[in-house]
Length: 429
Image 1 (cartoon, rainbow, N blue to C red):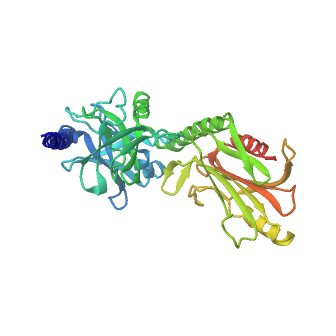
Image 2 (cartoon, rainbow, N blue to C red; image 1 turned 90 degrees about the horizontal axis):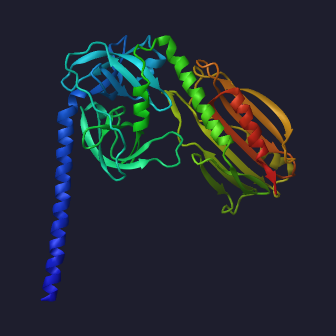
Image 3 (tube, one colour; image 1 turned 60 degrees about the vertical axis):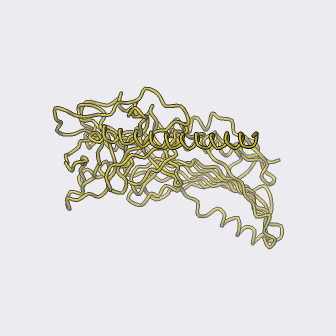
């Protein structure tokens, strides 16, 4: 009897669990259907139209936020128009096939948001409500958008809180964000916006612009259309403000140092830089020892398809080549100095050639180095520069430290103050 009772109890639990799962799935499907039916008239495809051909060159998603015809989307969805307003225009496409022109009201390039507005509005305009707070971690939320130009869909997923150790705040979303869904809303079960689709890392890992960035652009939006001549000055102002904040945080955070060969170098610089180490000690045929430590910011700011900004990379490499001889070690040392540059895809239409200065310097700890400091200017933004710095120590024979950093989109003053702190962080053990 006891065995039958136990088996019966186990079977009952399994049935209850199955019913719970099926009920939850059915409720989730019903919620998704309700959200789509209730809000599809406030969801739009945002289209960038190439004027000469009259056809779309790129698409994204957007959603209406008030009765005045204001819509939110991603900055990167409208970036072609921002950089080339003489070549493109912005329009919307409704779920029933209607189209209309849009004006650009404002954008936040750092947080990848843009506010656009219908040129003509109707008496009855449907809009999404904006949430007042984020849901609890683990809650089900719903991403809406227009993937692959297939029409609007609703994708359920899980709210996993804000991404940890990130300079640019993002919500970690477990769900599929596909191309074309950029700029679409992410809502709670009540249909209130609590984020905006922005990026995917694949494997059901998505990232959303969080609620506080959405409310900020809505609260500070201007009433008038942003003039085209103000587009690039606005970008520069936002980038300068952002990089000043970032460099200030980096310089005022304790740099944790650890041994690297005979040197001591920073191996943790702020919570939002990811650091890794590597060496060739497992290579039995290596004629020299190479030990590396790299730190980088895993995020950059999208300006247009050929240009990113806001990147930070730091690298230290200890080289020891006692079996090479002086000449071969110097050749190895020289090759390690070559090829450094920022990974922001900047081309000749965006930036000038690098202008470099070479110096022999001694830092506050008595470490002497040969340094190369290079700047290249952004052609559209006269106060922004990409920076490459490389230093090679001169205190030892057949061994030494290569130090290197790149900064993308900073002012000259920020670059110079960061360079001094970077060099002074190196010591001999």
